[in-house]
Amino acid sequence: MPRRVDTAVKEGGFYTAVAFFVILSAFPFYWMLITAFKTNADLYDVSNTPFWFNEAPTLAHFRYLFEQTLFARWLLNSLIIGVCVVAITLATALPAAYALARLAGRAGEALGIGIFLTYLVPPTLLFLPLSRVITIIGLQNSMWSLVLVYPTFTIPFCSWLLMGFFRAVPREIEEAAIVDGCSLCGSFFKMVLPLSLPAILTVVIFTFTLTLQEFVYALTFISASAQKPVTLGVATDLVRGDIYYWGELMAGALIASAPVAIAYNLFLDRFITGITGGALK
Amino acid sequence: MVALAEKFRGRTSRVSFVFDRPRILGSLFLAPAILYIFALVGVPFLLAVYYALSAYTIYNPSYHFVGLRNFIDVVQSDIFRSALLNTFIFTICSQILGLILGKFGALLLLRPFPGRKIVRALIVLPWCVPIALATVAWEWMFDSLYSVINWTLTAVGLVTPATAPQWLGDPHLAMLCVIIVNAWRFFPFAIVIFLAGITAVPQDVLDAATVDGAGFWRRNYQIILPIIAPIVVVGLIFGTVFTFTDLSIVYLLTNGGPANATQVLGNLGFQIGILSGDVAHGAAVSLFMFPVLLGLVVLMLRYIRSREI
Image 1 (tube, each protein chain N blue to C red):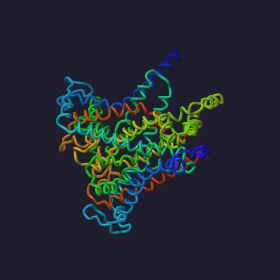
Image 2: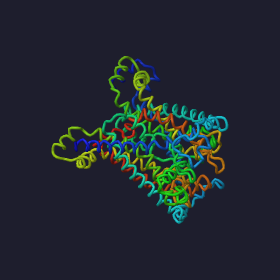
Image 3: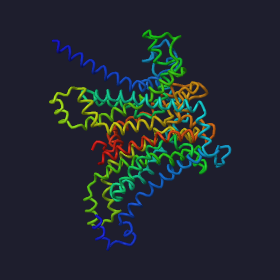
Image 4: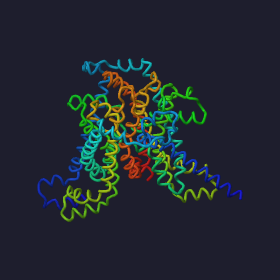
């Protein structure tokens, strides 16, 4: 009997701790969700219990967001930026990672680490000179400036990720292709790339989410509302004067963060492998 | 592979003859990535150094060389000195808090239980979602009138509406809020890093230790921790670099206020260099982050090296 009580206490403690962590992590998102669907009268009445609906839920904030603000435009901007950055990243990181993994030999190792370290160069160190460069080439206040700058952190990260993957592709496959009359370059396009589709998919997802998460460069380069990506637009453009429209803000934040949260969760393990680079091997 | 390429080179055309040389092909494959990074990371960095040594503003774009004067101006300003101190407090406190939460969270998630996958998906949310958007949600939770935290504290009788804390209005509380939000953003990352490390510890090592009489804490701190140290260090360096240089949480939550109580280097550089247009002094402020970054990168390199040997 005492043993059973003991286990019950232990189990209770365990699940309480789990609940603590879940609430700590997820409460702000629950708060986003419930705020987005509450009427203003419900939101701004301190006598209401804030954790649940005191009046019927409403879609008014979402309607306002799409009809009265540039929210749809920001989503489109983010999509365009994301697609372009993915294209640039793939075009440069795929061959670079392959060269680092195979062709460049021992020096490739050092070069690979060098490229990876540039991922650690923070935006706050570069935003001043980059904003001058962007003004000089006439891209200030344009989302194309972000298309130009975002690859500076997606290329290093994705090259590193892909390099690890290419190392795991057996050399025999390329050698067989060469014996069959393929050129070295051809064996990369015809044999290695098709085999790497899962890795390429991972890179596409990460590049896209990294562009959605970025805030500092967007804040620095873009002040025209119509050019903002969704993260910047929601965080800085839905506050009019000093008045915060919390319903619309939370609705916007919810729509913009949901796809990123899902994509990241699905690819989390690969991200960790990428970041730690087999530090435990 | 080289020998094979050599052997079959005879029947290929002149162009592919060039493309079939591993060295040339390797350089061609590497060139776009390296050039891109050189042009948009290397050159801007050198430009930043030059701005910091000049009298450049957006109103008077002169490259007039002034030596270290900007750095001296910056160091003599009280706001800069408090920002420097705040940046260290902000980084160290939030990383320690994040690591502690991460370690305990990882211990919980190690044990199989029903719904573990869903729990993990929920726990990693803060790290997945764009931080700017999550910060806006926190700002709403810290709201001066409708704060859900204050509502709860009032409901359980800890404070009255009149004495409810002004989370973002009080200098010390504002600093606490900024630290908490940052730790909140990073602890899921620490959890996954710890998990990745712990699951890689060979089970037979643990079993052997248990047989030899090592208890829970001893197994944790004398066996598991040394084995997972490299991966934790890499994770910690990432966390430190991104926290030390970040401005989004501070910018959105307090914008450095009240009265510069939460001012950090990143945000100060932004205010001076971008908002006021004083590029030279802004660049000098930003460059003060560089020695710390360099130290962390050297540490990282040593770990990567020691792993290879």
